[in-house]
Image (cartoon, rainbow, N blue to C red; front, side, top):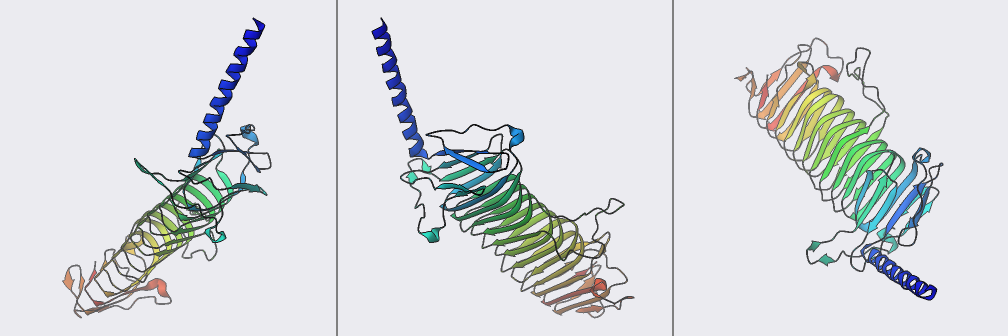
Amino acid sequence: MAADRQKRVRIAAVAIAAAGLVLMGAGYLSGSSLWVAADQKGLFMVEDTPRSRVSYPEEGRISRAVGIQLHLDDFDVQIVHGEKLSVETVCYGSLRSPDVKVKDGILSIGETASQGRGVGTTLLDPRGQKRNQVRITLPYRRCGTVSCVLQKGDVLVDHLEADDLEIDTRQGDIQLHDISAQQAAIRLGRGNGSLLEVYVSEMDYQNERGQSTYQNATPQRGKTLNFASAGGPVKLQKLQVDIARLQLDGDLQASDVKAGQLYIRRTSGQVEISRLQDNGVISVIGGTGDVSLQGGSQQATVNIDSGDILLDVGRGKYACPTTAITQKGSITQQRQLAETYAVDCLAEDGKVTRAGKTVEGKNSFTTAAHYTRDDRSKMLLKTQKGDIALP
């Protein structure tokens, strides 16, 4: 009886071991999962789970990640908020997972293509194309420097607060949702860009009456968002930033934007910004395509090569001091002009209308302001070929 029992135990042990090897092999074929924990100093510890798995410390002991650094060639990347701290890499075909390293509390995945270690080309599955993936789940919002540089792939970052945020993909989409950062640099290749609820600001936007104001001044120093797009459409919604610099080659659609300084330089594409939340200075320079600005702002400048310009920006019922210039296209000012403004309108090959009627000068309209000490009391609208419409 004892011998039979030992034999059955040995058979069961061999079966369990064989099953474990099969599962382990399946894990390596489909990619490896990496579980990450942090000690009370916020440093990472990483283990490869086909071999072992670390235990999680108590949630109260997990403080913050010092940093995340990703350098990959052809991967989709997700950095999201979740219940547990984990890192999962999934590779298809003959591709192997990129190296995962931890040094000085910085989680590093992959290396740059310039170092000659690209991950190769993703193989096609009979049911469709498979995508290599890296997924990082953080149980806490706070993180240090986050850098994600891809040659190809989509990036999704959700519910994260970072000191410095750098996202760069030459071919792929970028989605940021519920993000707070000290500084942010976003570089988008030919893909779609979506920023929803992004906060890069330290300014107090509320005055003692609870109203948002910049008090006729915009921040010369502050938290900065740099965003560059090489051709895809960009969508911004609920963005609050001290200084934003956008360089675009493609359409921009933005709403609920609150910025001290918002500079947009473009080569082509339409710019549509609605529901501005009492911005300081907004500027759209260069390129071809229509420009539409609507909402609260203290000063606006639009100087483009061609395209129609629609302006409905200002403080209250009055338009803010504005400079609008287009070489070819119409200019429409919808808000009422303050009597204290010096207005200078010229349509070289067109006409100027006010309240639907052609002005006496037909193609020009000029008034003298009560106060002309600086640009805060000037309205300059000019087009070489097109009409100008005033309220």
